[in-house]
Amino acid sequence: MAGQIYPRIYKITRGVKALSSPAIYVENLRKVYGNKVAIESLSLEVQQGEVFGFLGPNGAGKTTTIKMLNGLITPTAGKVSVLGKKLGDLGARKQIGFLPEHFRFHEWLKAYEFLDFHGSLYGMSKSERKKRIPEVLKLVGLEHRADSRLRTFSKGMLQRIGIAQAIIANPKLVFLDEPTSALDPIGRRDVRDLIVFLRDNGVTVFLNSHLLSEVERVCDRIAIIKEGKVAAIGPVDELLHAEHIVDVRATNVTPSLLEAISHRFRLMDHSNNSYFSVSVPEQEVPALVEMLVASGANLYELKPRQRSLEDIFVDIVQVSGDR
Amino acid sequence: MRSLLIAKFTFKEALRKKLVIGVILLSIVFVALYVWGFSSLKNNFDERIASGNPPPFSFEFFANALVLMGFYTVNFLCGVMAIFASVGSIASEIDNGTLHSIVPKPIRRWEIVLGKWLGYAFMLAIYVLLMCAAVVITGKLIGDYVPPRYIYGSLLVVLVGIVLLSITVLGSTLFSSLTNGIVVFMLYGVSLMGGIVKQVGEILDSSTLKNIGLATNLVIPSDTLWRLASYVIQPRFSLQMGPTLLSSDTPPSNMMVVYAFAYIALALLIANWIFARRDL
View 1 (spheres, helix red, strand yellow):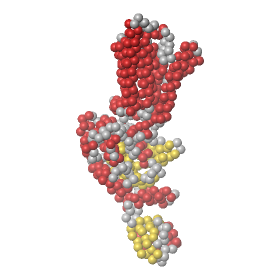
View 2 (cartoon, helix red, strand yellow):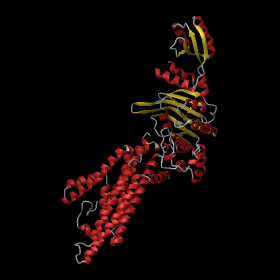
View 3 (cartoon, rainbow over the protein chains, first blue to last red):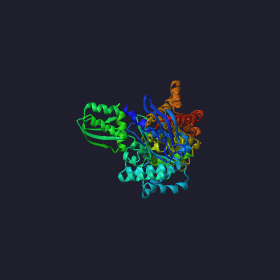
View 4 (cartoon, rainbow over the protein chains, first blue to last red):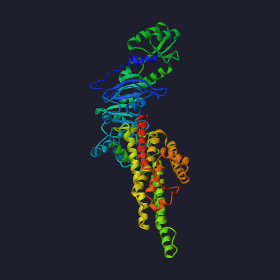
């Protein structure tokens, strides 16, 4: 019951930049392996020019979804268009960059040769590649390693060169599946700056990451998926402020009071009768106080909670997990 | 066009594989031994003539036997190289994830399979032609012996390699590298044995043995192509002396060449069909 609160509250909000057709349109996407359902029914839209965060617990189907959008896995059912084209359209693929999650590259190549190969896969001409490769090497901070073999690269450097191959062809849409998993804090900041740089240049970014603080900082909109379905989707601000939660400290709290509160509002974390939290719309906070006082409880503290994306994520994932 | 890009890449990659380097080093050793063996045979032959004790056969007889053995060795090395260079061409790239950044690019999956096949086929062709040339040139320079139709014979050995390559690439879309290596190498062994069984069947005129041989030829036509190659590079006098276990005195039908081309095309079509549908 409580798990359904999110889809109801967080309606799909059309982004401000929704001037043209969406960069990604997914309707009832489904993937079944034998009798195991990987993606039940997924629908979402990503607008052009936005940074879209794609979140969910392990096994929720994030990577499967990204792989379907990139033609690595064939969907069982559903309607998908990427950059306005059907899946697999070569013209659309020319404008898409992708950093896979568990990537490995041909380690016998030098960084420059590697980007040259991927550039030519995009159909870039020799002169275009010659001009572009130093640019992207600089963007990912590897300009001094152009002649090093990938074999000699650290994990973080491989991740950077992986991002470089994703953006080499000046794509309109970039999929990054866990782009910062191997990076140190400075590397993460660099990737964040790079994502902002891409957005400033009108590139749509589809970001799959476990680092919620990062997602919170860089994404315009996010979707949280759970068990192969979208559990919440919307602008980050809206998600952060969609639910008003207060933390309460009081004594002499009777079980019947808690029951009355849970009837009217959503009672959370009430393992201890002296400390509990309530999800309550701001305008109803006086009513909550009145209930507490009227029941004879001694109210010491009642303060609105500042919620982070992590709180929301944990909330959604755990609440639905309890069912 | 994009297939050629993959082909070029595959060729470059193959040249860096230890296996290929190993085969090339072994081949250099083989050519050196071959030259040495050929010249000492020639010296021995000349000495016996000079000492008034000529061997019972003409030098051509021995030269032909050496060239046949030389071609057979090239044929075998080419088979080993075809199988083990391409054994993980698809499977290992799926397993280690290198395909994950290539498949989403503007390229069709069949172009990837075809490109890899082309790259290896090109490598095999160069290898076989160089090796066969070394064998033929050695015979010409040292023994002044040139086998008949050696170009056709060399091309047939190239075809042996490409047949094995095609079935290995097909296997690679289905099995892991290890399983594929075992399966294809067993098939290769069966084809070698099948060829010998057929040969024995011909010597003994046993239809059962001949049919078993024929069946293996159809399952994997590499050995029958070798038989044809060995037939075309033998001079008439050698053919009249009868078959050996490694070579033929009666040619397999030229239809086997047509069959081999159809076999290669079918293997590639199935490989493309399977790979196009695989979730990576």
